[in-house]
Each structure stands twice: as structure tokens, then as C-alpha cells.
Image (cartoon, rainbow, N blue to C red):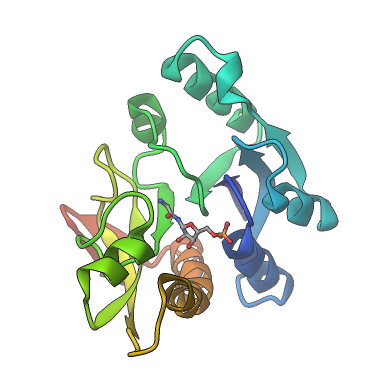
Length: 201
Ligand code: GAR
């Protein structure tokens, strides 16, 4: 069994998609051990509690600096024998030590077709740019922001009458498919990172 930690900052619908895939048996030999949030009242924490998953709130404002905050995350992970970390709507950049410690074992979901529209508010960025196709990306996390090796992507069309919100909702539906799919591939040992490229074995 692979023990999973999920880092969140908000609503937690992507966390829910992974919980559901594990509970339905679609993903086997995986267990979410802990959900960690940098936001105290994130709805994601309630979702975790509803499924009897332990939760940790780590308040960034109570630390001297970014490193001290990251140390606390590492401490919270320790003891769970974590084999995979999911960033599911986690709105911070991972520190170097986290990435070094969990190299190719941290997976992020991003609401655009990388390398387009990195960073925050990717759906709004895509909408404002006027692209006709956007989508979502699941990738391993490296030292850059949204630059790591890509595992899966899904296209989503932009419609004439879209707003950034309706586009985001259409993208989110696909996020809920490709994030659990990527977790399944990882847990089954079917992902091999060769430089920039993730090979599905
Ligand atoms: C999702 O759309 C996710 O792709 C995005 O935040 C949302 C979280 O929703 N993540 C990022 O923008 C990362 N920079 P959720 O909390 O319901 O899963």
C-alpha cells in the first residue's frame, strides 16, 4: 500500500475525487493518511474529516519564514511513511527541501494546458488570452513553478458564451478524472520519469 498525503488550500473537490476513487476500489493499494492545509477553515479539511482522514492545519503566519513553515510540513508528514504527496488546490510553491526529500513523488493538478498559463488563476488567464482550447495538467513537481514533468493532460474547449467561471467549471470536471487516473498510474508503478518526459509503462 502506498501512503498518500494531500496538501490543500480550499474547497477540496480534487481531494474528494481521489477519496472517491480509493473508496470505490478504482484505485487499489493506496490510502490517504493525512490532509494538510495552510488555510484553517478550508472546506477540504471537512471533507477529510467526513472520511475519518486525519487533518493538520499549519498556519504560515505563525512561522518566521518559509523554511520554518516547510519544516513543519515535513514534520507532519514524518511518521506516516508517505510515498506520494498530492497538491490538490494547494496555492503555495513547494520549498527546495520538500522537493529534494520527495523527488518525483509530488504530484500537482493545474487548471490549464501547461506550459501555458502557469501560476495562479490559470482559467482566468486562459479566458482573458482568448484561447479556444484550454484544459488541465497533472505533473510531477520540480523546483520551478508548474514546470515539472507532465503525467496527463486533458483538453477542454472554450465556448462562445463562456465566462472564466463557466470555463473553470468545465475544466474542473476533467481535473476530477485525470488526478485520480494519475494517482492510479503512480500507485501501480506505471510512471517512469526520463528527464522531462514521463513514460507510461
Ligand atoms: C483546482 O482548479 C486546481 O486545479 C487549482 O485550484 C483548484 C482547487 O480546487 N489549482 C491551482 O490553481 C494550483 N496553482 P479544489 O480545492 O476544489 O480541488
